Image 1 (spheres, rainbow, N blue to C red):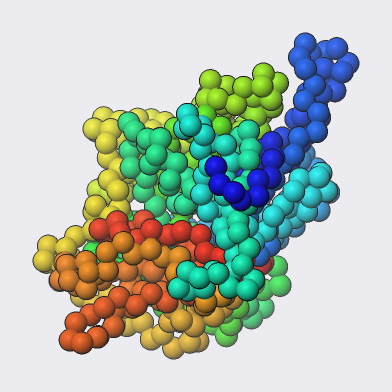
Image 2 (cartoon, rainbow, N blue to C red; image 1 turned 45 degrees about the horizontal axis):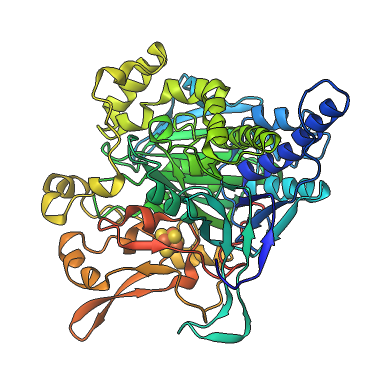
Length: 568
Ligand code: SF4
């Protein structure tokens, strides 16, 4: 342990996303319920009483770094708060119409039948950022401590490898690593249980999984990158409550990809495109795929005469059930996207994230009841997940994403069979069908056929700043800000590889897979050198995931920096 200030807490939640906010609220309610039952003699146990709960969040406010499509299945929030609408939950619109478009370069068709997993009538179109802001207010009203601008930079372990809390990042360090006048050391928040709900590719979850081998015996996680804009469009272009999902253009048949268009209040449209980060062609650029998607005439017609008002990008865990890490260890639990709770087939994870948080909360109540915070008690969380509707939902679609690694057509056949067999379809194949995305990227020398087919993929995209935008312009609309005088939070472990092997082998794909123009190869003294414009970073984690050499390590920057997704 260090000389830093130590702040004792009981439970520390890392990340103010839907999983942890639901968990913290549910924990408060469940302790109250437990204590009442004990007091009235209905339960033979001990009272737990008031416990100190903290949520640390790297964004400048709760919701600042939260980005999703999003259509929310209200199943979990209804369990958390049955009267959530009356309680003021800021849902945007109710889904009134579903459509599924198969797109080609010049047009597309409305599928006569919307695939059942993509039927959303009656569910809610939301800004997840706004929902989290509201849940944060509910938490504060219950006496839960929320610390925005406090990134959890490290996990704290005791001598037996049990997690005993987190260390928050230092503030006021200059880019050379020296202390500035406003220097403030991070603090050690000590906790009996630490809950990691950092979202996709959380930096502490990554440390924990690697240190304790929580992915041993599991399939490697696969990720996708969602790139999104909000547009204001003329009245009549797209109805409020309408939800469109698309397949086809611009993805090639080897690459997982699909788009969405959701009609929100006041003629605002949420539009975005998801690209699987297990693509083979190193020339793919997920941001440019999205821009190209908007050039399809059916899509462009929705946006005609409108203007883009916000931008964001974020990865999601796409592997589902097979790629769930072990969800517990001594003193720690994993929830939400950090625990691979997303249903890839429905492209939905808010409800499963919230439910996982609630099950974590119920497990924590048991841990306090028995005063045992070791994995002997915390393992019940994984059991609860497997006995809940999370399992019922994720297990039947466990082979969904893996099938896409064999190409779009086999995936669609598999999806149909899977629907009929509750997921068994791919079960006849070897189980190990999720391959880590970075291992699937082909070298330039090996992409012959793909190169011929794909040509210059983005040649027809105008980047005209009307319909299609370059990355730097989009980043401006993400309201991204970092203090430039701080150490770079993107640790490239061997820049020599970038300047030599990667130029030849993959053509420096970081310039393409990053949706925020952070990575640039500059000509310096006759060779290419990497330049990292870290202040553009939207914290999507793509580089940490997709780099074929796995030499990029994303660590938390100074608290408060990053995008501002308010209302996204
Ligand atoms: Fe995303 Fe990495 Fe680019 Fe930041 S630097 S925006 S985390 S890809």
